[in-house]
Length: 151
Image 1 (spheres, helix red, strand yellow):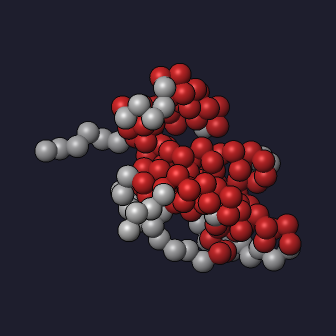
Image 2 (cartoon, rainbow, N blue to C red; image 1 turned 45 degrees about the vertical axis):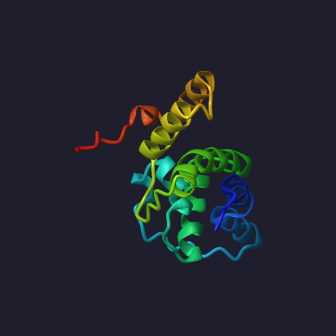
């Protein structure tokens, strides 16, 4: 099966689980349960949660959307953050066949950016601007790296 990953990612940006959570919130039907200690979870991990290869109930995403809102992000900012996360960590997980099912975070975004730079899918300027963007959202996040692989 040949999958157009760019199309898949764009579809997720437009209609993913956090978009559905926002729509439930606007309609007054969201049911956040606050079962996690959301304030202790990084913003990038929250944003990448919809990209893991694990299905969660809608209330899980209602919680995440509510937490992002509590952190002061507007709907438009959340959409921009999601698009960035999908084009990096989402790309890594789906287009590069990582198939992570537990969590993705800033480390994965950094890894994706490095891979995209190495593959010449982005320029050095885009790479640098992406890291600056990450830092504006969550200081220190662009410095997080995966530990080196042991052979």
